[in-house]
View 1 (cartoon, rainbow over the protein chains, first blue to last red):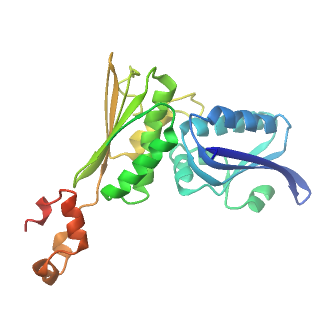
View 2 (view 1 turned 90 degrees about the horizontal axis):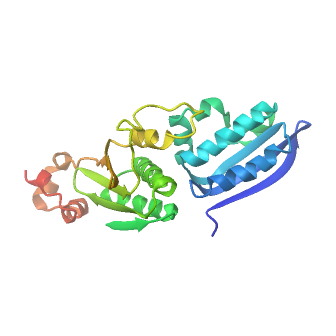
Length: 116
Length: 155
């Protein structure tokens, strides 16, 4: 079984398009480069809103968090917005400890994130 | 328990979680310990040139996870200060210091040893009904005795 799976879908809410990326499994130093590469691919398509559904992500370490922060910065520079959805307790903890959740908005549902 | 690892951090996390629960560390502290050990072991993946080793032990007071590798940490205060979100690294050890009750770090030319301590909930024998104490221990008593926790029960 893959340690980390990432799936991408394009959608829209209230006429606003967004890209939804579901990240599931465990993200750590051994796959954070790959995670960043996959997310950078989406950033390069210049979405207005990039939503990461973390509900299936059981674990995230500081390397994977760093990847998300870099993606957030890249997206911000081109006028886009990154949003996180439904982090599990362990992932919410690292977001809170590092105050990353103050930098990247966290929502409880994809629908909420899509309308910002 | 001793375990050598290279890049199989998911396996390390599973082992730590299993032992944390076995030792009696409740959630969400067990998950905190998993995060801390994974962050330390991630440093092995990043910096060390040979496999790392993980040892876990516990008694009635605490569970300790010790990670050793051949990497060298030159800053004795590594992880004691919150890094900026823009910082390239340094979040890992800071997180470790935030979630663990005690962190001991020793680093010299032979490598680095980091011990992560988590306090275990104290058994509370005096809160049990007298009759239960007099007629014999319950399952909890036997469980704790098997773990070598007899001191608190000599009352």
